[in-house]
Length: 355
Image (cartoon, rainbow, N blue to C red; front, side, top):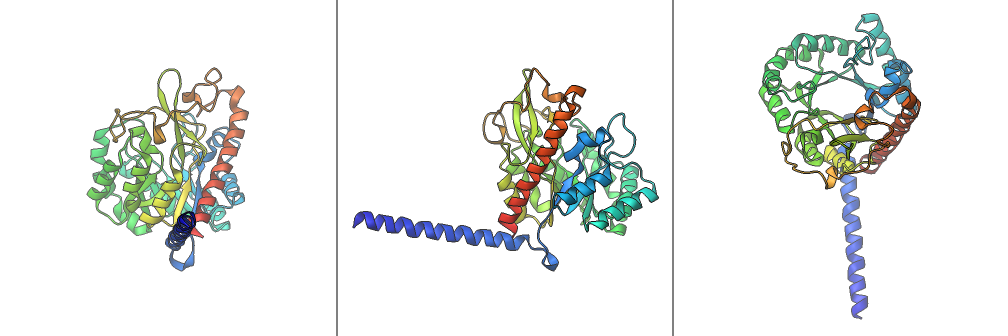
């Protein structure tokens, strides 16, 4: 009798918990619905195929078609120039005729479009806003520090950004300030608050806080209420024989709790899109002093140390982004597989929480 009673109690509790979990998932699915009955859209950032771009195997038109083949809803176009290469990153130029071709290719698939740039120089941002308008992009990502932590750039950014707000308003384009690799979430929020415009808010990058010693889930929790757009990615920590590095991996294979991040973005933001940025192969140094973002050691959670994805005798992690010729074919293949894996994982999260 006692055993039966305990079993019955456990069974009823499990049923109750399952019902609660189901109700919560249904609630989250409702939150994914946006005006007009549409559901959360998933986009892809061009950085996910950076090796094909820098070797001339892919251009923006091929990327748009590839995004469609993957069953996605939009494109995030990175226009930060690569050293030694002409053009505006993945765009060949800002010439009106060329941008019109890009716009038509985007419209062909019914995609949304966003642009990724950097810096806070008003003249540069005005040029980017004009280009965004021409291709139909309605969100622009930027960040303030350019490769290293620069408190003077952070201090200057709000004044610079205020100068371009009228143009954002004219074209109905939003500017999203990113927690890139050097900026803490609190510093991004401070810029947003100082600009104090409905056209300027945050770009929530799921992984970049790690470079500033910030827990990624907590960073997402802070930025979600401000988010205009995202980079959905995954990281591990590795040691390359000299120091610890943050290393990109396909989404869902690293140590960031990406599912929890997705749930937070659904529950705590007004986002209608989540953009996959598959940063593999890529590894980078920490950009802030130990503990700057509240984490004081590697070893646990997102900062658990793993083996590098490639043997250290073959390639050093800091060389992943521009690999030697003899490894290029293998790493292009790995990047393509990693992007497909990341997209499949993210779409599964959408199916779980948004449908």
